[in-house]
Every structure is written in structure tokens, then in C-alpha cells.
Image (cartoon, rainbow, N blue to C red; front, side, top):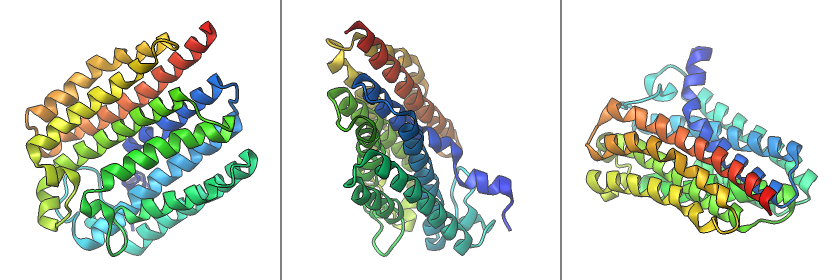
Length: 294
């Protein structure tokens, strides 16, 4: 029987900033459009957080029963370590998905954005299909693409739309950037796991690229995500605030490029998560301040 502390660790709370970041950006974009709605923002955050926790438990269950986590470095795996029954982890994932859908339904009703019901079902299907089912797309090297789409574009633009009833150029730029940061986090995670993933037949993008190219791609993702808002500086000069994060990007980039392996890469995951959260806050502040100049 897993303890409460083990269940919390199994939820991988360090990944939660990746769920919150797009909501912050999307809400700031809605504010600039004159449509910010605090209740809708909170509901969007609940959906994102619950989906993230659900994904983490689902991955724990699916990788655990496949044996992928038998010799894994990093956070506790409830299934792979034997700390919890596989069925309990699976139902924890399903419970999170159900709560996310409930919050999502309330958000759709409030916003009257009925087409988002289908989007929500797609989110849940993608969350389970990453490592679950007969042909998990995470084992085919497609996880990075789905992370970009759902934890970048869908989460950010969906947040903006459910508040303002439309989306904007800044919302798109912010969505793309935070989606790329999410891809960078996944890449760092998968670079750490290349040896065990290759042995288990889990052909992530990191495995397909190879160790060196995967590490270089991580650094390129950070650079692109951080510099993309420069396209907005003509009308939104305060988005230059995001460049304050440049020093924070140096250490994880150094760790990746210097070939650190195993547990030495765990700080990269934490730092990447913090960078994305910091980006979302500074980007949001930049939009609000620039709007005040208009």
C-alpha cells in the first residue's frame, strides 16, 4: 500500500508548472483583449493540472506494466517499484481525467464554447494514448508533437478563447513558446532515459535522434521559445522582459551539452520547468504593461 507521500511523488509535482504556464499566458492574452474572466481562468487551470497529474499516473501505470520502468532513474514509479497496485494507479489516472472533464464541462457551459467538448475528449484520449493502449504514440517518437499541441497550443489558446471568445497574435506566440518549452522538458526527460527506453523498445524522439542530436535539440528549443516573442516587440515592447530568463537557460544547457547522464540530468528537468513558468509570468506581465501603453 503506497503512502500519501508516495502518491504525491508519483504525481510528479515538478511537472505541474508546465500545466499552469499556458493558463497564465492565455489569461494574459484574454486580459489584453478585454475579456479576462477569473472564474474561467481558475477552471482552465484545474483542467490543465488534473490532466497533467492524470498523464503522470497513466504513464506510471502503462510503463510499469510493460516493464519500461524496471530500471528507471528519477522520481518514484508507483507501479514499477511495486509501491502501489497497477490497478490502483490506473484508476487514479482515470479519476484525474474524470475530474478534469467535469471542470472542463463547467468551463464550456460558462463560455458557451461547445466545440471544446470534442477538444476535451481529444485531450483525454491523447493523455491516455501517450503510453497506454496497444499502440502508444509515445513509443513511436510522437510524444513531443502531442505535447506541443496539447500543452502548448490547445491549453493556451483554449484558455484565451474561453474568456475572450477569440484568440490573438500574442496568444499564438505565447502558445507556441510554452509548447516548445514543454517539448524541451520532455526531451531532457527522454535523453536521461535513452538507455532504458532503447532496451524496452520505447522509440522516443530522443532515442531516434541519438544522444548528441537530442541534447543539441534541447538547447535549440530553449533558444527558439525564448526568442519567439521578439516578433511582438513593435506593439508589445514589454515582452522583452522574457529575455531576463537567459541566464537561467545557461546551466541546463551546459548540463545537456556536456553529456551529463542519469541522475545528473534531474536538475535539468526542474530548471526547465521553472524557466517555462518564469517565461509565462514575464510574458504575461509584458502583455499587460504593453497594453497599458496602447
